[in-house]
Length: 392
Image 1 (cartoon, one colour):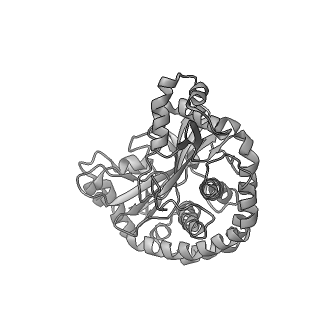
Image 2 (tube, helix red, strand yellow):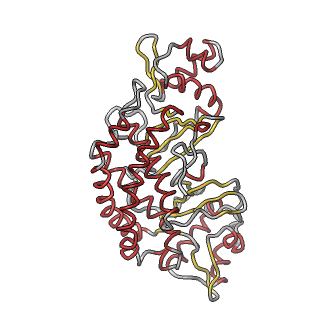
Image 3 (tube, rainbow, N blue to C red):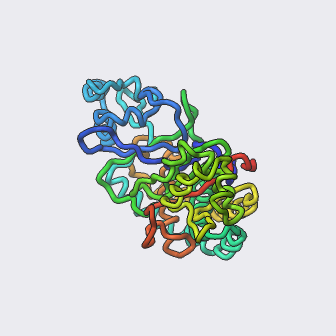
């Protein structure tokens, strides 16, 4: 099943914001979910359990080799998390009297292997996409909002909507990637990586969404720098969304932006100032313009066209390379722990498309999130119209 170009579910945020253990000591694992969870209970959300250093230690020890129940129980003592919690949340399974990992965890050594393999295969995916560059740029050129960099638009529509969200949907539809499993509160995969490995700078795989009515606020980039642009939309999301949608139609005065948000100019002033400060809006005299992509119902054909091209490229690429990648990753921890490859492929695909995105930045199809003068290095922001989401 494929999804809308205007994604409305947190289940398709890609490899979400990395979560770090709340501990005075450095964390042993970084961890994340692909999906959405409505629970912070260790028995229902494995990432909540991983906030505890004892849990991180157990998972790394089991990654080295399956462990006896007594060993696991001893290490968890005092953490507030039980072995039963870890089985229920899906992070462990009991097999032949020992506990095994039941999800994808990459040690530092695994990360080295993954980076080499994904880097090599992302070369061919980037090259295949660049063969269709003229088609993609022709579609993106139809976006007529003044002030918006087309390279940023490409980064969001191709890099996030197509390769991340669309790629996750496509790999699932083709049976290459398992669907995120339904859990007690949510539907998601989770994954972890041992800290202290290679830097994630310029591996563009991370998206975060904040929804407010029909407005979806997105940040998309790497996990090297924090993505902070969504903070102001918590309180003023509907007002900000209305203003940004007005700017999608063309330059606006502060009076027009206030009218779009249905507030007076005095109330609109601080909001507009904040949008200028974070780089979403710029002005020339009295007229304001959007500096980030704002995608409404009038842009559905653009996004759908881009997804069609990218899906054709990805489908052919996956058919040719899926099994080859599996062979080259046979020795990594998840596969040694007998985690099904179609589950592990969720993490594999994030590395592949994240490194592909880096190469598309270097090829000039995308704007560079680390360009000189970039206010928020490492990512770009965008706004989608959730209410206009067409269904596949």
